[in-house]
Image (cartoon, rainbow, N blue to C red; front, side):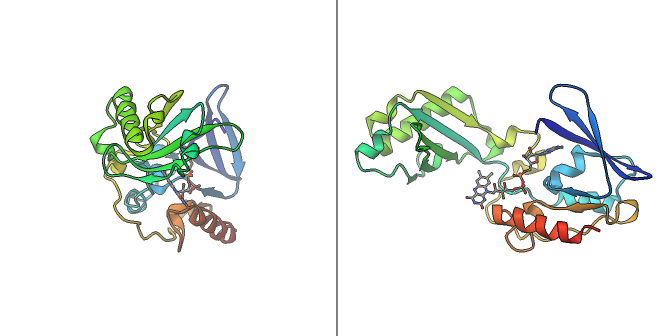
Amino acid sequence: MEHRVTALRQTPQGISVQLSAEAGPDVAYQTRTVICTLPPRLLAPTVEFDLPLPEAVRSSWTAVPTYMPGNAKFVAIYEHAFWRDASLSGEGRSRVGPLVEIHDACDGHGLAALTAFVGTPPQAGMGALDHLCEAAIAQLVRLLGPAAQHPVACLLRDRAADPLLATADDMQPLYAHPQYGRHASPPGEWAGCLILGGTESAPTYGGDMEGALEATEVAVAAAP
Ligand SMILES: Cc1cc2nc3c(=O)[nH]c(=O)nc-3n(C[C@H](O)[C@H](O)[C@H](O)COP(=O)(O)OP(=O)(O)OC[C@H]3O[C@@H](n4cnc5c(N)ncnc54)[C@H](O)[C@@H]3O)c2cc1C
């Protein structure tokens, strides 16, 4: 919502959540309990705590791998969903070229698009956008035919480069689905008033959207 949480401060009334706005003045909200749905690995280095957290808590958060922060998405927009004319689904798996998983992303309202996961691991870098788009289009042409050659636009969203999603620790790609679980509320002054939610705190479906819902339900139930 164009606001970034920058700090949590203890006050006589509870916690003051400090936010900096994309545009406009900084603001603060007063609350008794904070349910934090940032990935724990991101919370530790990017949000300031006026009463310092124990080092053991910080390092336990930093050790939790954020789910799939290194996956970039590529979108090719076309004038027309040509693959459907050829009775193709637009879905594909490939090991030759930068795109590993491709899906039809037509929205039913006239947008003709293909969206794909880029397989390049974050530590390898994305390379120049032009070069990546060129290689991606060549791959789509191999898979779906010459009509794929001329998209109206290509978009790339590199999550690994977004400081609100990934840290330097996340540059190591995840090759398996991690086992997540609930993280204990930090001890001392933060006990009970700071609860971790978000998918990396889910007891069973950690990493998935279902896990984000599950973790938040658990966090809400744990709130005093
Ligand atoms: C490429 C990819 C494909 C996926 N495919 C699937 C799938 O098919 N099925 C499935 O179930 N799940 C999938 N997932 C996982 C799913 O997206 C996540 O499980 C889910 O989004 C986690 O929700 P969350 O609310 O815990 O965290 P997030 O969705 O990561 O939300 C955290 C938010 O916090 C924001 N933020 C960070 N720092 C601050 C700050 N200081 N102040 C304010 N805001 C901040 C971030 O910008 C972000 O928007 C996929 C994930 C990726 C990356």
